[in-house]
Amino acid sequence: MALKIYTKTGDAGKTSLIGGTKVPKSHIRIETYGTVDELNSYIGFCNDLLTDEASRLMMREIQDRLFTIGSSLACDPEKETLMKIPDLKESDITLLEQEIDRMNEGMPQMRFFILPGGHQAVSSLHIARCVCRRAERHCVHLQQENLFVEPLVIKYLNRLSDYIFVLSRYTGHLLGVEEIPWKPRV
Image 1: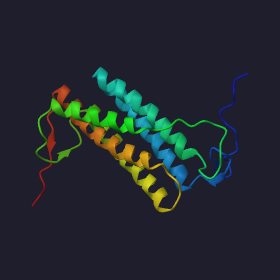
Image 2 (image 1 turned 180 degrees about the vertical axis):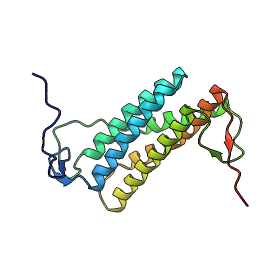
Image 3 (image 1 turned 180 degrees about the horizontal axis):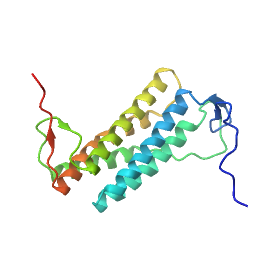
Image 4 (image 1 turned 90 degrees about the horizontal axis):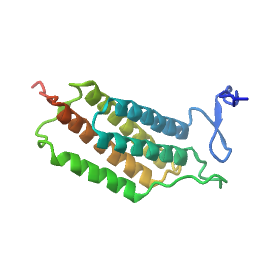
């Protein structure tokens, strides 16, 4: 018999962290890992639009790291768990930086602010970048409320949003899409 997807345990507006602690579904920790999950979904969508194989492989790697981050955020930091949660590593951030540098090498220098758009893949990457920044802000909010969040998670999300921005430019460059400069009204 197949496992049922519904448990009905959340029908009263509460959910459990890894470790068993019940919290309201509106808790900032739930909002934070929910936003990371949303980001992971956007990354998957963007990956479906990419044509560059190296970028597609990197996006799969990023999705794996986002599951790691989501697992970390879903844990009750006050309780020991029997579950082994994968760790984020400094080398994960280094990999993002190396990829940013690699993509930047083959593109013209950015001389103006650019508007998101020009191609569905480019626009979608900009949406993912914005969701990534929101996830980062939620993590900072957790930290400011003295709720534990691994500092490496904030650093990773910060660098990831930079990576996604550069990937949007790189994707447009590979597709021959002209960047749309922002021309402020003065």
